[in-house]
Image (tube, rainbow, N blue to C red; front, side, top):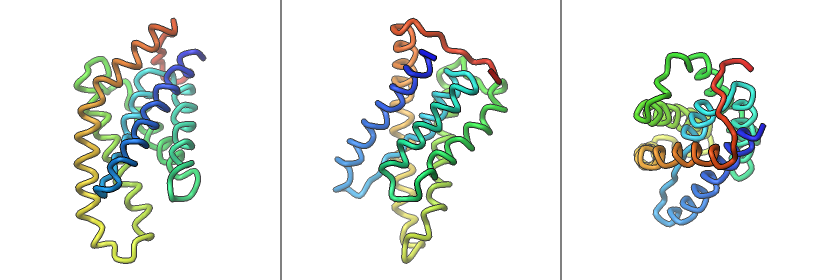
Length: 171
């Protein structure tokens, strides 16, 4: 239970940093999205049930400040987490490069899914795609740069909290 609390706090911290960065980048019409990093970090460091709770809670936290229906991020995060949990034994989570690649793939999938869910809010959807592509590229670069640091932060926070990461599939 201690590991769940520690991982959730690191996830919440990253989300708050991204909120502040998005506020600063709003004048440039840029948006950073790190949802895939949050999902993959819970996947690699928590058990199935604890990861599900952490992903659901962080999804609700994303929904609290999003301009779409409440629960959309939480449902999407849980869906991606559930798909990845079945692949967890086949994923290279012991190597940092593998973790970063999985975080990038998760981020891309969730970003594109959210884009298609929100496309009806735009009067001319075709005019939106250049901005979406720039936002995807900026988000992927940001996730690839921050993911190694964030995974290290989580492992160090678990060490400081005397908590152990449990990676068993269904407990």
